[in-house]
Image (tube, rainbow, N blue to C red; front, side, top):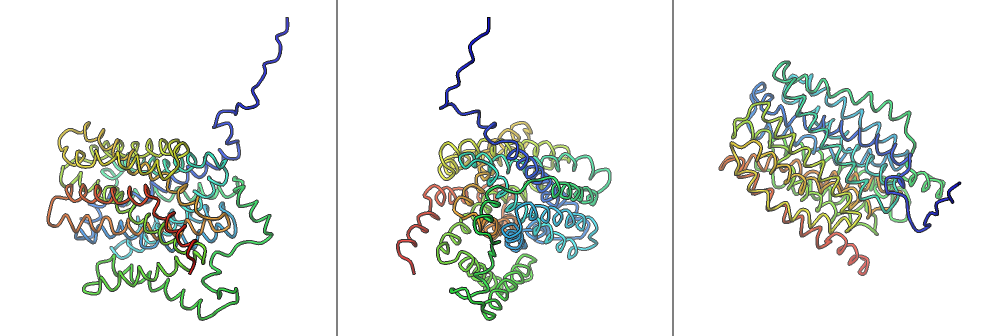
Length: 478
């Protein structure tokens, strides 16, 4: 006897992962793979910093500046490759970014001097900036709106997996072949980029926006035209001069050549980048662009002292072997990945701002215990797992948090500029940690920086300072 057909409740939705669809998962897989490779390439310098320092005879600040170098160029890469993504599609920008950081990584391995290595790190920074903005917008615009917290968190977990893989490769390759081979392996993502360019569909939101307007957006238009839309050579020259001046000032600052001019140069760079943010934001988003940039800057300051200097701390203060460093970074990397996945679910459930603030507050309980453990490798690994899951891991919500404030036609360029100018905090963080460590233990310096700056980000995001300032500016337009 045939059974009657099973009735389906029309109110019952399929499981969330089925709602994403094949196209959404294809987009995610490619972008996540790009993030894995990005994380692998980007952290190589932190793993081999002691070896590089010994070969080139660098002091602590010079060595830390090699980590900072990629952040110096990120704001420019985010702006240029983000604009490429808005105008020609997210897929093209993703491909270009992966090619850039792959070639920059190869150049790191071939570098014969500190200057050449620093220049190669600038190229890595250009590529990584575009990877962040293009991949984040690509995935979020390929997933349903209600699941974009998960898209954001899951995507950023790829970066953490890349750092874990780098640590595993480091323990095998560097003792046997030397530090340069780590960078030679980093060129492999270029092959992935060529496949990705041919195989991937374009982001749905971007295609729909282009179809509706029947024109490709030009995110740089406010920099080269008057408010009414007429071309302005003087305005264009001013903004190109500001961009070049900011880049030059940052180079001088982060190579330690500023001397007594450090503060004037820093203020000039901040003013130039702030002016560009205001102009790119246009009248409706000027305050928002600035507030989001400051928030991201503080976010990088709290995460990157540990990200950049943890391997150095483990090798110099705790005297860990390459294998022990690998094991500790394994725990830290998977803690970050787990935190990114958790952030995806909590961000969709509670909203990105609330989930971010509550989880980051919980991380404060683990900061000082991490740096109080010396001889117990397992305990240190567990504490780092918990710290990274609740601090660096929750930053997986940043693409969702930032992208939710920006319109589709300027999302890649806006996200690329705001995030990567704010990422200069990552350039400041290792230098600040190294400076503080000149008068006290490095571990103590990292703990103080991480705790204090985490608390600042809790206040900025938990109180929704960017959103409040944006709404206030809307009520009182200039």
